[in-house]
Length: 308
Image 1 (cartoon, rainbow, N blue to C red):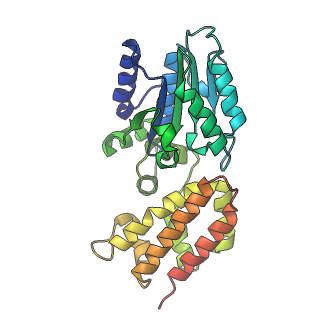
Image 2: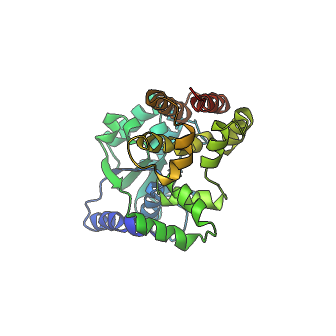
Image 3: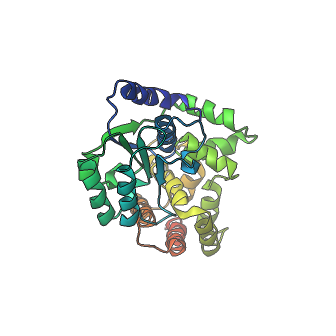
């Protein structure tokens, strides 16, 4: 898989460390979601087993294991980590080394994290563990401290935009610009949204605020599409709405700022906190009802726009 420019130096430094026999046994790849943390882990795993392929998760190789939660809200459980531990102590068959990628590492429960700690304290020879997360703060400090942190830093906005344009031709510049705002410019998240033919949520939020759309029906649609993704995008508008009260309105939130102009600033801030709480619940492993969470948020959003 060809790397984008903002990942090239990080990847090259890891390859150089391996050539110098200084590559750590445990690495924790982390960074803002959508900037390629999984892409880097994928390329590094394929390099370590000397395999030319596109997707390491789909490669059938005796010296590679790819572990990930089965779905949104699912955990990486202790049985999966125990299988990894058994795999790591086996003799390499082809590549001369054993490689495990643990995607969504923040979803390990307490039991699986403790089982992983034992492996990190005494790593088998010629074994490499690549943990991947877009939520470093949710990782146990004891796990973080035993791994070499590999940070994925966002690239220049122009480079990211050029990369997206190279991989997807969009006819609607206005929608592309709005989506770029909603996804924080993250190129992989933006490209995935374009491939799904996503549209910006700003117009729908405006319709709900103006009572032109029914919150209950919309909650069901958004739940099916992916509640976490929608909440993440929604959250980006709140700072812009509040900022419009002290400076020129952000072009991406001008209409929403006008619709919520009568809402007190502290009420807007409380709603932002409600989005943060909902996001944490949706990212958690407690099987929260995403549809009901979205219904409550949309009804509160509509009430926020009510004239005072």
